[in-house]
Amino acid sequence: MTENYISLRVNRDFGDIITTYFDFFKQNIKKFTNVFLSYNGIFLIGLLIVSYLLVSGFMGVIAYEDSYTYGVAREPMDSKYMILVGIGGIMFLIIFIMVAVLNYGLASSYMIKYEDKQGDNFDKKEVWEYAKSQFGNIVLFILLMIPIFLVLMIISIILAFIPLVGIFANYISQFFIQAWLGVSFYDMLQNKKGVTDALGEGWSLVTKNFWRSIGVNFILGLLIGVLIMVALIVPGVIIGVYTFHVVENDVAYSTSIVATVIYTLGTSLFLIIAVYGQCLSQFVNGILYYALHEKTYNVNTRSKIEEIGNNKA
Image (cartoon, rainbow, N blue to C red; front, side):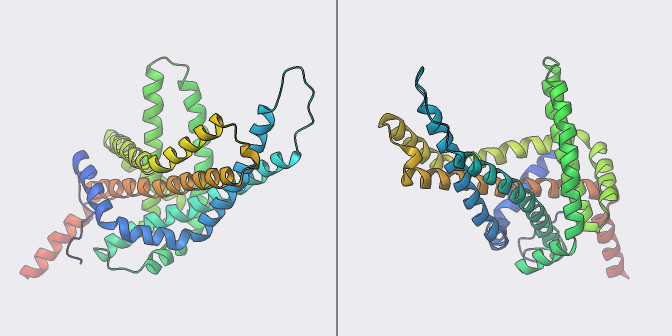
């Protein structure tokens, strides 16, 4: 057990979960970032390539549209721009699914190893090996998330037609799904269950602690969103200033290497931060899972009682 170990298997109330999350975040941010960069390197390069294709394609399309003059005939748009957008979009979808599979597994496995080792005295390879050992279940879980979110999207559209009440119901349903899937994923990895069994257990834990689960995901989701926005301030300002320069000086951005580089780096940085932010969001439901599981089953409490009994004996 490390000196500053934060026990996760504790029945915590709403405020304690929030506090524990930030304590865990501060203690583990450096080590987890190392794990994140170590195993996401190839995908980060892939996101850079995707950003270049999308930026080049959209810049060409925008430049073509801006060149239109009313009443004046013009040549058809070069098809290469739409090809770049199409290839970039397909690559993004493929990389997005692969990144989701990898980082859902890495973030959850990191927290599981932290709890099992009672601290951060484990190697990043142990995190990778643990995630890899359940690769099949992770992939199946991520694929099942797609129809679940499609159903959620349909529900959101229906609720959008209900004034006021529909807005609140929409947010409640979104945060409930996030909590349910996040807790279920941890239960699947922690106890090496099948996907359907884990979804059932996650449903039971979250529905029995409905408002706590929704509140934690809402508050911490909001705070993580603020952190991500802060991280994007500097690149956002740089891109904004450069865009102002382009507009004011009528720069031919579609053929400018500088414009392509700036917008490509800006887009790739946004995607990378978004991926990292998803990992931080998964930690939220990890702490929630351990709190709800301990409340229901008292695993840690029983263990301590047995330990005291053995010591007295």
